[in-house]
Image: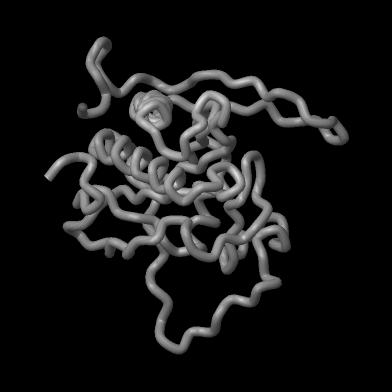
Length: 221
């Protein structure tokens, strides 16, 4: 079994909207021109008990009171810098991997919005690259839930084809750099925006101590 296998046993999948909401409510951990990485220590929420009442649509995280845990009954992932809309299908259309004592300690979720990748073949290509790169780094990542979202589209002038080797390699290289930084424990610290200030380019700083020996590749080939 290869690291890119979609059934890679050490990497589970985030599939429940409530879990996506939990992870995306955390500060962005790392970012690149086209992708952002969020991480939450812990495990996916347990399955709902039969007969449990469904979450009310109006009970959203934004309505939570300060000091209380956000309501994760609904999920917003159609975003590039903030939460804005609720996905239905296509976040990561897969079967949830159960958390067992012998199961995975890391789970991966994907958010590839249609507004950033209009063609289904493009979204499939990008999801596959995210899974493959994440699987190659799985054993060296911190345990918990990881969500990778596309935060901006690839330039159609540079990549006119909906799916091409050039787009595949560009996405893979960018994702690999992101996950290698995650393995080293780095974080992008985004400077808070003062109240009333219109959009400004946030600065980023690298932090954290390397977890791998200098000069050694942090992820498997």
